[in-house]
Length: 69
Image (cartoon, rainbow, N blue to C red):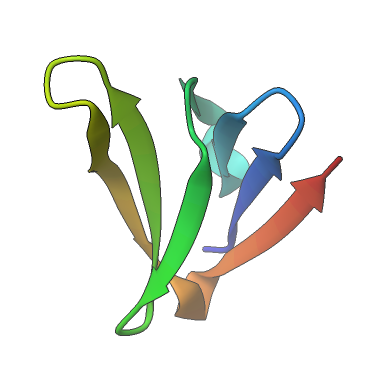
């Protein structure tokens, strides 16, 4: 199953559309998506730590990533 990760660099949001299941996850306050050991790692700003924390990790092998500006 191929899923689609959409990173909007202007609005700082990420949406994950999970194939035919129709499920969708959305994250806001996302300054970057890292590539780490075969995974896309969604990093979200945390007001508690004044840094970024990983909130989602998906395998590159079955994920198409689109970057919107």
